[in-house]
Image (cartoon, rainbow, N blue to C red; front, side):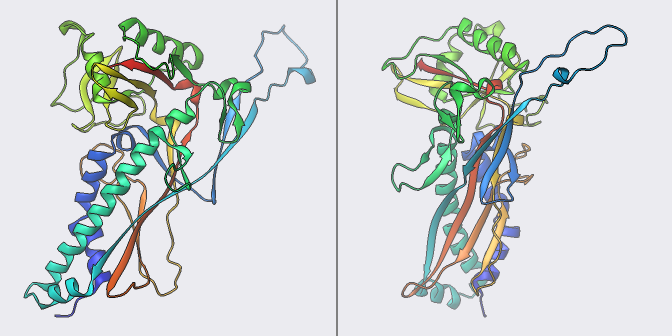
Length: 365
């Protein structure tokens, strides 16, 4: 029976293997699946603008004549970043293809074989993207290439973010508490977390959708709660929040909330050391202010085979595809006796309103 690699890849992505890849994203990329909106970009760079309010309304007398000095126009700050490209290639040797072709179930065998390689590549890309969503600096430490500018580089009070001097623009300054790079963690108290949420409310008039942390930091938080202060909801889905998902995944849901804000776990949230001799960060996040800007690839019509698929569910269902990073699979030039392919994602994180988000640094674990 004749077999076609491209036909089999189409089957894998659209029917047989699609739900498995969605579950992979949801299970391994908790930050992306719960806390980040997905937006498709239109340009090579990622562009957006943030408002820097400066004017104030006032009360006036009856019949007041508007003066030129009365007009309030908030200053718009332009931000830009380059997208990061994440790549993981895989190949099928001619021998593997020949063996599959001789099988009485050759199409099924080949689908299983390609599916395994696609799954492995997507797993590696998923892990890398979610890690960089927290700790990416814009430059990959191994390759030197552009990577995601993550939360630890975006939620700051001084320095540069997306081409702007954060220290001179109040609206780009996040709510950062705790002692950074102290070398030792600070014991967390409920008063610390209450203060963090209060500061965010005072500066932005908002409350975060989620509090995100590494499970080890979560253990420190859990130890602070008395039974009657803790909302245990391990098996049931989360209720609706202002802009978050209507359902959360068991892999992220900690079963806790604080001051009405659900606490989610993510294995890639910053942590240093081990329990008893380490520390980590707490992130206060709102989905409406975080976006993963993706660039869907287009078939260049150069004879190579292309396939795009959205794998990430940002709506909550474990295998429901609501829209997400567009994963492209493209056939490459043959290298010896093998058919080669590459899995590729082009994405960058946009932090749209940093003053409504925050981090608490170096919490003892």
